[in-house]
Image (cartoon, rainbow, N blue to C red; front, side, top):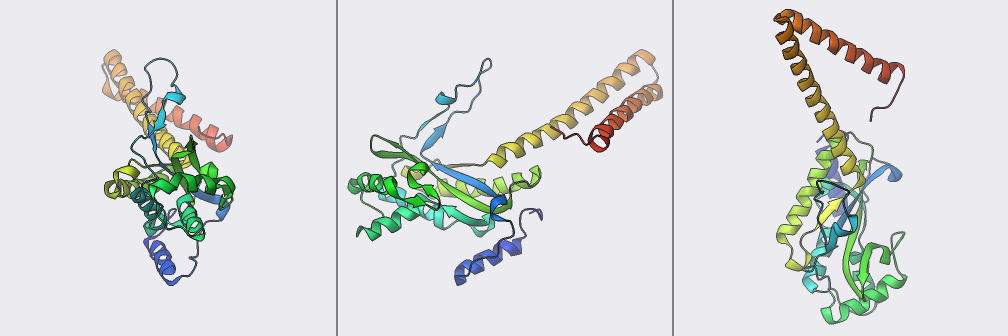
Length: 264
């Protein structure tokens, strides 16, 4: 991976530290770390209409197959939270299912909780407990006294301002982790997906850069062919195109270096 993410040795050190019960030495300050959310129980429909604006309220729905009250769903969610691969560099996790398991055992119950008791217990739990600094109820979607969906949040030892290429590499690691979970989990805890503010920015910037390069290439090709048709002189056509390219480069240098204007 690029050096902005983490060297393989750093991930290995973190794994060894966990095995020895020693807190790993993280590299990024806590307030600068990337936040990744992993969502259970919500399905997305992000197709955009040809005309008009996208209806955000209609773009998501609860996944009817997601049944967190099922013991296997609780096991799968707990395992996802506590057994993430070390290469993800998770420095802190906020998983309500992990804290809920501690709470129910403190109440004299066993975990995973039988389905017949789950919703009553989880409603009691989310009313007055915290997950790190968050109210437990802020991490779940509850309807009619039942948890329909929820999310975990992970603080990753990666800077939230890394370059788009590095951010996309990190995103692919999370893609792999989520895909591995979905392949192994019971039907009550599948169709999980992850999100982060950084993913959208990284993809947008990546597409912007590649789109700009493609547009310039097409522009110069069309300009060359147009001049070639009118002048019937390939060297002259190339000279005109190169002159235009030089003007564009000069303007870009003036705006970004001399004036210090931000791009985007």
